[in-house]
Amino acid sequence: MSSIQTVSYRNLGWDVAADLYLPPGFDESKQYPAIVSTHPIGSCKEQTAGNIYAKALAQEGFVVLVHDASFQGASGGTPRFIEDPAIRVSDIRFAVDYLQSLPYVDAQRIGAIGVCGGGAYTIHAGITDHRLKALVSITGVNYGRLIREGFAQFKPRELAQGIAQMRTAQAQGAEPEAANLLPDSVAAAKAAGITDIDVLEATEYYKTARGAKANGATSQLMSFTGAAMGWDAFLNAETLLTQPLMVVIGDKAGGFGAYRDGWEIYSRAASEDKHIVVAEGWSHYDLYDKPEPVAIAMAQVAPFFKQHL
Image (cartoon, rainbow, N blue to C red):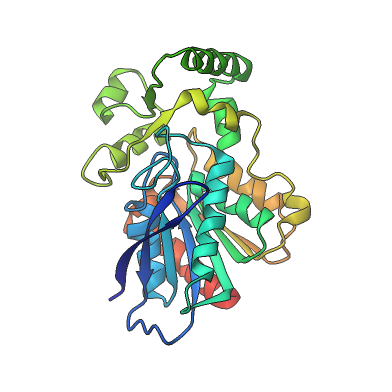
């Protein structure tokens, strides 16, 4: 069985909380390949990026670091519940720094995996940080596109104006308010007329015992969302994304757009060694924790990392 150590390390001006998943028979005198695992938007290290993918990869012989995003979970940073793509990508760089400081990690054999928003953050980190030698995106979502489209109801200029008004109010003394990204329950979502599979299944995952964790807040400080409005997770992928890449998606597409984003980055990446894995008959949130689609993913992901790390 793998084991878990809780660790912390310094980020820009605060401490990051992380879990270190260690492989069975771990021996500090040896050196291991390592992987940074990045959680979805509104999630935390104890959910899918940790208790599913990090756990499975540790069983395959990797040291896996799962961190709480800055301003979220048990990590530091104020105000709380900021979702800033640049800082989320910076978090991955600091995770690599930490892994490279560990004597039992081979500093030249570090890869990264992420789920949902974390999958696209992982790809962007790989574009700009070539210490990462192999990249896997699990049902990755380009957060900048999602903000401009779904969050803005396809009216990004109006959303930008609303964000500006919130920041102005806060600069003049108003209290920042974090918005809950999801309905309180599936029943409440349906009563409100919501039919999108991703919203309904996200609610079923995060708001029930299936996936709920204390730090999986599904909350966001919307007044700081302007940082994402002009962001593209895949910027410069045609030039700089050269590492081996694996993209895993389900073919039951929903409003968050992982299916289209997966095919887009697979097409745009300059990587000579790139793969797309389509879990047929499964959705975005099925790939978070359901045994069969996770097994489809891991049957490809584990050999991929073993080959390239």
